[in-house]
Image 1 (cartoon, rainbow, N blue to C red):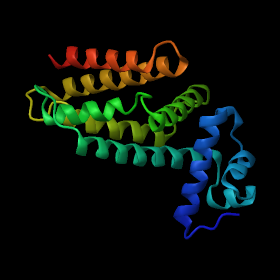
Image 2 (image 1 turned 90 degrees about the vertical axis):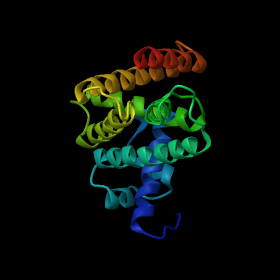
Image 3 (image 1 turned 120 degrees about the horizontal axis):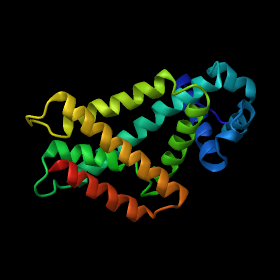
Length: 197
């Protein structure tokens, strides 16, 4: 059995196991037993750290957001602002483009996000943690997409929702194989340019 330094590390390892199970075998393969086997711990250990599968799902959603945020920060450090785009708009584009399955990390996270969305649809809606995670991203995009512009808050909210919905929809099309990753990225870029005018 793996050794962990503290409670937080053990919870993170169990959430990682859940993410791996979903990414490799789908959400239908998720059980306390499958999570435990993937984490290399007993089912009792999983239940000691999490009171339910939903609690593990919620912790995993937060963990994915932290990882995506780190990846976004890395992209922003390397990326130079594109001509004609405000720094806020460039930040928002980078955040939203991370939803698209364009590399191994975002592909894995997109698979898990899609599975969690589908689970929410068939199980009475998204959990409060999933809704809070989505709202946090939307608030960020609302603030950044046209930083310093004269757009009303309500208009920025609609624009952020449109871009986020488009990015999620393109992610689904790419994951399912209806369009290629590059087609999804090109479609997102076109939509972003149209909304930015």
